[in-house]
Length: 423
Ligand code: HEM
Image (cartoon, rainbow, N blue to C red; front, side, top):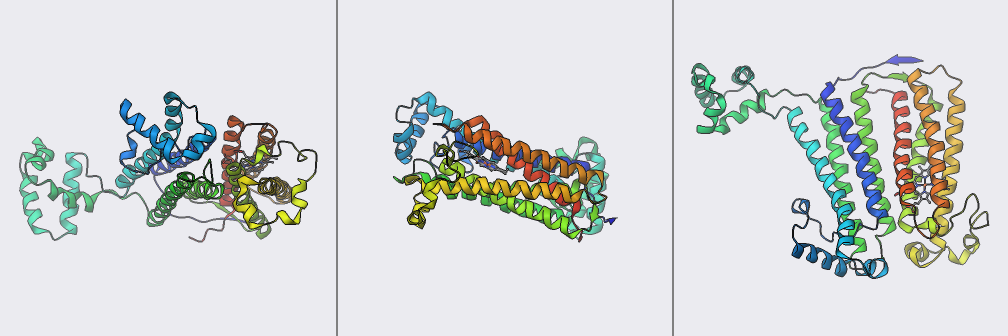
């Protein structure tokens, strides 16, 4: 059964702004992947959200940054970068800086239009000012300002421009006019959702630093801690998903509502399993687990790595000190492989089951996109794995990571089209 429900409609400008946001978060995750894969993540040893935007500008500052890296990321420096030159350091510094810089640019791309859309930007023409002032006068009882502005509105000063007046008199008096009269383009539900987006983004930044800090000043890891890495990665994916969902709500505010519970349960299960698979993927990357068993479908000639058959290996200590044993990488590989099989079965069943229903073309496109992306992602995973011989194949991993985002986006898109609108 299909029916249609409605919710407040956003302007085209708002929808485009949200789409840009989704693209920027997508790129942020991809750049984060490149940062990790080029072993660049520990090159900036401080967290300075504002001043950190400016990279070292002279030879002395570069030397200081390099020295800090050598001291604070000593374990990594000695393990893999001991013969690093200054120009090589600048390359790894660039990736970490760019990853952080992109986040800052994202903040601005979010904040400036946000201020405009909630109506905090002053009117931009004299006519708009006059209109704004009229509204302001009706809505407030700020007599003093009213008197001042009355005089102003009647004067030829308007021809010379309010700006001139504002410069010489009190600019501050114009702020409440702008505040009360700016065009508000975000409905309250969207403002709430954007508040959640900001909260998740801040959490991602915080865990980004917690993750980097886990690799600094420690003899235990030459890289960052795999579990902290996957939390940071997971929050990045959560941010992408939630912003994408918010975008869909504004892009297609009236959706056809499909009432088959079984299909909805299946697509929800697909999202949950994909989310688990992404977390396992983060562990795979953090532990560089691909290097241990770079063969498929077997694990170095065995169906399952023999180390997993040894009960004595199943200890928490082995999971914590994953870089000192083969058990943890073997376990996470098995989890990542078998979750991929489970996801494949689930998605195939979902596609098969959905054929029984008279679905809209849009939903069908979402379902086929999901199926196609599963095949691409699975193959990318296999190619990544079999190329993990001695070193990690950077391009394949970046594509595999981006593929995970696209797969998740298709699952979310299909869910959205099937959702019950409660608004
Ligand atoms: C089908 C669903 C799959 C999804 C959603 C998925 C997702 C992911 C994600 C998100 C990562 C982390 C990437 C990063 O942080 O850069 C990852 C890593 C990895 N995945 Fe998958 N994966 C899937 C299937 C597979 C399959 C079938 C294989 C191979 C049998 C595979 C092999 C790998 C390997 C080797 C890594 C580690 C790459 C590295 O060292 O950085 N994946 N996966």
